[in-house]
Amino acid sequence: MSVRDLADYPWDAVVPYAERAREHPGGIVDLSVGSPVDPTPRVVEEALAAAADAHGYPQTVGALALRETIVDWFRRRRGVDGLTPAHVLPTIGSKELVALLPLLLGLGPGDVVVHPRAAYPTYEVGARLVGATPVASDDPAEWPEGARLVWLNSPGNPDGRVWDAASLRTAVARARELGAVLAGDECYAELGWEAPWDREPIPSVLDARVTHGSTDNVLAVYSLSKQSNLAGYRAALVAGDPELIARLLTARKHLGLLPPAPVQAAMTAALADDAHVAEQKERYRRRRDLLRPALEAAGFRIDGSEAGLYLWATEGRDAWESMGRLAELGILAGPGHFYGPFHPQHVRFSLTASDERTAAAAQRLRASTVS
Image 1 (tube, rainbow, N blue to C red):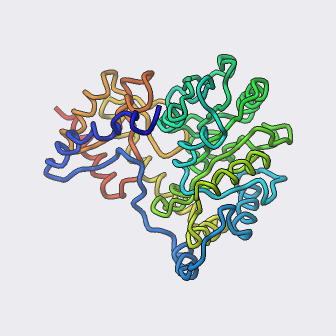
Image 2: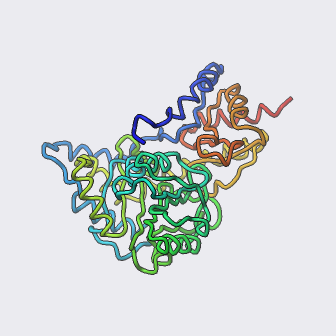
Image 3: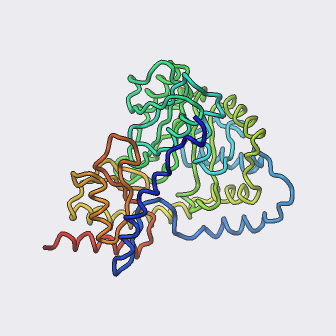
């Protein structure tokens, strides 16, 4: 397979629904793609501006100050001790790493890439790009011989599933038994909503309770897009097994995957500041508290969604039918068909619309139940 063989970009199929939603007298409420709309934190803007005189090439490995900050962030926010700068690497957003990881690890035909059943499609794209076989499975006991890479996504996109430490430990043990790299996509880890994740940190695949104190064959991926509204900065990171990190670094040097120096400075500032993360989480909490009961009042059942940036909902019919109903209300969401073949009746609702737009969606959903 090559880039030319990739299917049409799935979101293009949503265009007619977006056009219908825009015809609503109150305008469209776009709850489809999880693109942040809130301001970039001032501390980040100031760091970016101070680093604007970036006339030389940045280091692919990342500035030492950034890598030390990432190490401290894992300790402080994720409960992961024992990392050093050799365990971490900045990336140009997380999507490029997800798509390229099979290539960077040297996978190819005959290899298997495992990913969640309800899955962000880029896991499968990365596998197919190198000729590997994607397999959708959430059960470590089902993971096949030949698996070389296993993706976990906790909290999950789109379903908000969280893997607790015991479940992660089982997954890591099985991946090691298979000789596979286990990669945890943890981009929504700051957004826990329901017990126990409203009171305690969502565990990382690098947590010592999970790895038995060894990072061998384990990687964690994280993005600042959601916690810090830095989607436009393309600011993310990967951490874990230092031998794997070294291999990724060498490949990324050859490919010219250099995170821009001003963005590295912005990342350093963002990861060192917890106040803006708490502020952003409260914004998402307000929107979730408005949207969830309105969806339920309109006949949707919320499944999963215990953490993360989305509400995963169904009204018991095909997702495209739900998309049509929502478009008549001026609301755009994401059909479950985009996240694999296992949830054709689910729809994903993002929490990233503004407070005003979220309130408008809630009002329309409630009004739709009045005969």
